[in-house]
Length: 420
Image (cartoon, rainbow, N blue to C red; front, side):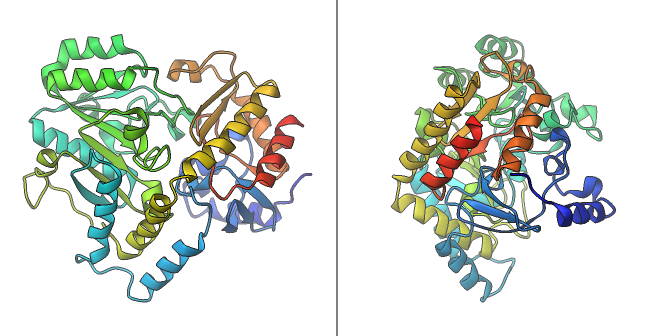
């Protein structure tokens, strides 16, 4: 059908004079798909509308928070009412405890929780708590897994670092990365080798239980339980980074979905209902090392912000009251997966409502597999989808997100576009 983007082009031209690359987060620049970004005016349900009036079925969903769709009326009402009482206080509010109670009720592994403002902050803080608890310095992560942009974790990361061909970030002192060990996702032997050499010094192992920042890569059978067993053996804190999978795969996230209990869990995106909110929590004895109870310092002026907690509470209550949502979004994702396969796409990875189509002939189970993808072919596919009113991630190495707001008509139109 083609789209006209005159106003988006004008806005992007101006934005580039004001912000690095014209954006506030790298993947939004569309560099990997050879286009300029569309600028969004508004969104409702499963649709987003750009400043030129083009409407798209949205499978980005703000990179995950939109499990209910955009502008859910109950969430908007909760935020509006909260705004009328003030935007920020820098003091405790009732909603902070109410949200903490909901999180803990949904995720049994979380015995105590701390609210923060972003996924980066949540993982950074969980790692610091693990180091404070164990008295050790080293952390272990996996190639292609992205855990935010804190210095010690920008080592062989996924997400925008893959998209923009930056293997590691400039500006990170070597002293930070010297404390980071890197294993291969889904490769037990690579983990055993590192624990064999450094096990007594590893404070934390942090992992995306479902990798979703090199495209969606599910854990192989037994891999997460293996991580649980080996970290227990060495007294290492096991951290599940559930910024993406938290409240998406199930009401209890990936920990419940796979039946593996980590020591700490980080969450973001969905728990904020579209507002800047994240959290980390887990075993009480570990969380009690955090100030003001313990000596591990972490603070934030906007942590537990009253507007963000209002959105989070409304969202989590909707999910907890209607847990059939997980079957509904899984069924929709399964329809799309089937359509991709029948249309000849060879490598489709899906876990629940998370999905990626890889432009490679290889089955993708780790970063090296994902890196064989033909990014030029992906860019052509992206353009075809966008020009036909389907908004997907402007990167081979990101996920598609299916929401409860996607209708059967949306799914049918998407399938027709896949086949065209």
